[in-house]
Image 1 (cartoon, rainbow, N blue to C red):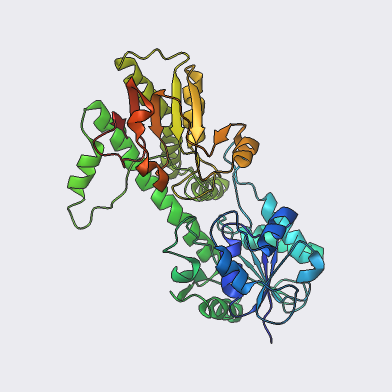
Image 2: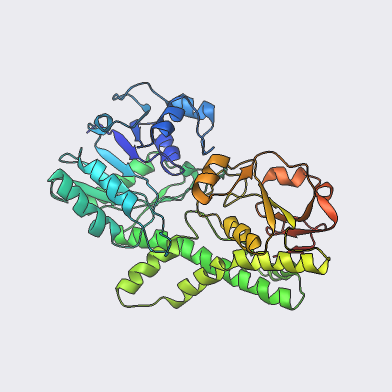
Length: 425
C-alpha cells in the first residue's frame, strides 16, 4: 500500500511533523485557519519553527502522490490519504478542566473522509483513555465504520519543544502505539522511517497516553519544589541560585530552576491526569499541590517587586514598570498560557502602569488573547522598575541601566542577570 499522510492541525506540533514526513511521503497539511494555509504556501511560518528555505524545499503546489507537502483548508484534499495524524491543541478551560473540543472537531473532520483500512494517529496530549473512549466513537459515528474492523488507530505523543532548534522533531525519540499489535507495528514503522533518534513501541494506546502526560507532570512537580525553595530561601535571605548551584555538584541532583510555569504542556498536562484520577475517585495530592504552587508564582513575583520598590522609596500607585517579555519561554513567539500575564495583572492591581516590550510576540495575538498592549520596539522612557520576565537573547544586549531611574528596581525572574539585578527568584 502506498502511504499518503494527512496532518490535521499545522501549529507548533503539526507543521514540523508534516515537513519531516514530506521528505519521504506525499503529505497534505490540513488546517481550518485559511490565513495560516496562505502564509505556509508562501513559505512563511509565523511560529518560527521552520525557516523559509526548509519549508519551501518540501512545498508542492497540489495534492498528489509525489513526495512533498501540500497545505490546504479544503476537506476534499485529504480524502485520498490513508494515514491521518491529528496534532491539534488540548487546552484547559478557565476552571482548569480539560477542553477536548479541538479533538472532537478534528475527529469529526477525519470521520467525514475516513475509509476502510485507514489509520488515525493522535499526537495531542490527553489523559489515558481519550483516544479510544472519546475520539474513536466520534470517528465511528461520523464515518459509519467500525473500529478495529474497518479502520484503526494509533497514539504517538508529541515531544516538540517550541523554539528549540537543537532538539527538533527527528532528533527526539518517539513513543508509538496502535489499537492492535499489527497496527502498532505499522505506526512504529511509519515514524521510524523519519525519526533518526528512534522509536519506542508501547504495548497499548493507554500506556502511550499515560507516558506523555506524566513526562510534563514530573517536570511541573520538580519546578514547584524549587519554587517553594525560592520562597523559603528568600525569607531566609539566602540566594536560591547559589544554593542550587552548590547542591548541583552532587551527581544525582536534578538541575531544576525556579520560575513561571506556562505554555501548552507543563502548565496544562497535569490537569489532564488529575481529571482522570478524580473520575476514578482518587484525589491526586502531589500533582495538584504542584499546580497550585506554580500557579501562585505570578502573584508572588509581583509582591517581591513591589517590596523592593517600597524599600527604594518608590511610590507604588502610578509607578511605571517595564516588563521585558510576554511569551511563555525565551526565543519563541508562543504566548499560549503564558504566566507573565499573571505578573502583569498582579502589578496592575497595585496601581502600577506596566509597559510590555517583547520583540518576539505578535502584538495583535497578545491583544486578542489577553487584552494587553505590547510593543516590539524598545521604549525610550525611564522606569521605576524593570522586570526581566523572559530570557530572550535580545534582552542580554540591552543596557538596562539607561532605562531605570536612579532609585529604580531591576528584578530578574529568569536568573540570567548576575550582578546587576536587585532581586531574583
